[in-house]
Image (tube, rainbow, N blue to C red; front, side, top):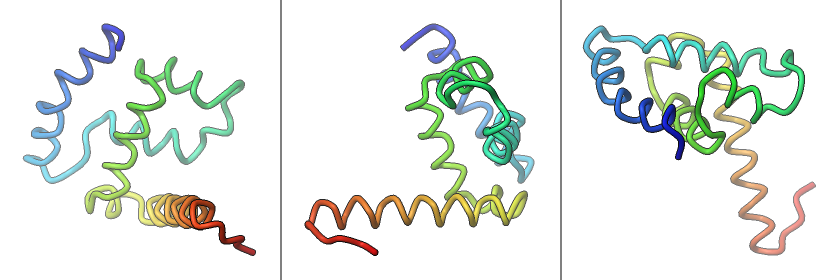
Length: 106
């Protein structure tokens, strides 16, 4: 874990509390949603862009993104994106489960 990531972690409860108190998403949450809408516009690997833009590892980014995908505030802010991300996540889970069971999905 690098210094920027630990700083983000220490600021996360405050940012989360501020977002909940105002009934909305934090600035970082909005930036992550905007990135997910257009990440393919960045040159290079998505993980590289995540580290450059957000200063966090890809693992931490996906943890934050999954929290956002499950939040009602994010669904209210951008319903089409959140529904698309939820569907993609469900498809990946279904594929992993089928692979573990030896089932071929068509």
